[in-house]
Length: 404
Image 1 (cartoon, one colour):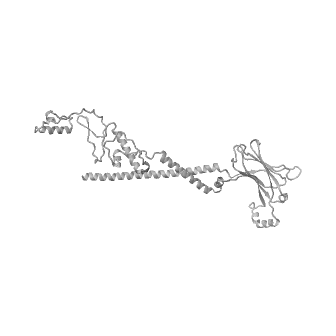
Image 2 (cartoon, one colour):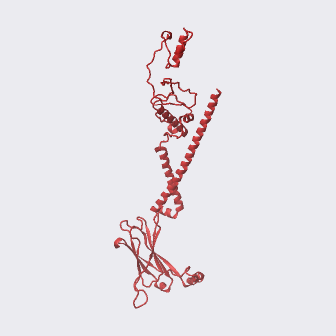
């Protein structure tokens, strides 16, 4: 009695330890899977946003230098033709993005010389051409130096004279920004490949010129370009939420959460001790049934049901096609069915796969055993032997030892 009680206590503690070990292992797996999934979703969201940004938002500006050319006079000093230049934007693919407005600007760097002041206004012409010199558009704009009175010019020279003496940090020049095209839209079938710039004045003096094509962003592109931090935070967060919903749907819908999980390293004894139940005669076929309230069950209940189904399936495979009973051998090496294991016995079962002997025909037992002349042999079962001994001892006080 004391040994049985001690065995039950030890088995109870063993069950608790096994449950705690498996629970801790499941918790570690869940934490690792959560961290791995979270990092994957975060990096995938960043990658999607960066890819979308560079494919949706074009470059804010394209700057090309303008190298002006002119014809020199043969008999006098100066310029005998209007300065002009051909600027090539691209040779192969399209530079500008379709359906995106652009502002085409010419930056002229002019000195504040007396010749430019006396020149006054002059014209700037820009011609856009496509492949094979196909005409696209032309624009003309006027430009001139900004006016400064001699007093303002004198005060500015006196105030900024230290900086002017240091070199090119401060110079007496002006940069004119002449906007040639406003909100220009490029045709997809005829992209701009060349730009011709011409200054319609021979007496203008300038240091350099630049062609600047600047994108005019509106709507989402404006928000993404001029507010990059806020837009990136909102975009990445949105992708994280969407991907989390998608991963959750795949996890809990497409992958069946009630599927049987096979644990490597668990034998029948460990599983029986973990489940706390012993099945003496399992059925031939066990079908896992899904109850109607399967969604309301906890994860621990589903795990216990899966373990029970797994153990029944294992026992069915081990005992098929016979019945799960212990088999013993007699002295003639014939097999007879043994007693079923007691429910209170929690020790391991040793199962031997033996070839079942053919079932002998049933023998009718008669009540009057004394008149039949029964003789016990080696194949006589213990129960029948006891009954023969009891029946013969009523008439004869002794039994011949040779019969035993």
